[in-house]
Length: 220
Image (cartoon, rainbow, N blue to C red; front, top):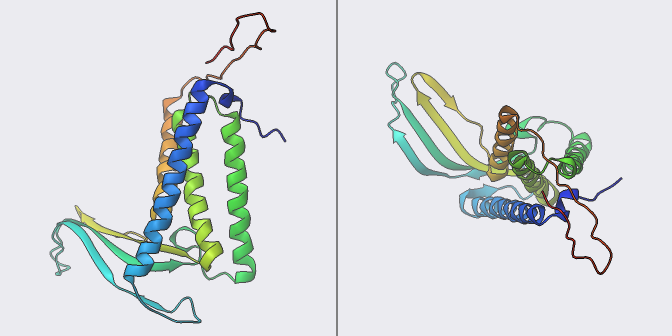
């Protein structure tokens, strides 16, 4: 399998790759640092043997509006708080109750396949598909961030808790983390690129002539 990235042979492609690498590393670092911080500051008690037995404190971050305690007279509000949770499944705790014999290999295989597919897709992507390239990198950073959690401790740390009531729409969102945010940003960027319907542009090159000639590679 050819693992080369043709667009890296242009100066513009190298600049794009460097920017995306920095975004990838920054996202991964922020995800891991915030998870460790949540573990240290929000976790109040845990069982030494059972990963599912623990207690967490709540930390209010901010609320817009005020929440009514009377269900008959609801008010509009949006609230953000931090709440430590352990997710042994996928997004929204899917497959969390699956036996470890199947659950752990399944998540490992899905993550490895996803990363390899993204790398292959990045290799063939037109150089002007900036949103798609950014989105794929964000999805990969989020997937690897949660994968690191599963390898180290056997569960993913979630801590961002959002709820709201807007014009009668009441929703308590599933607790999530920075990696989940990155994945969703990546999906949004991917969809936006599809809506833009850009015409693909690929980097083109010509070989550098033999010594004695002053020709230079052509860049997109």
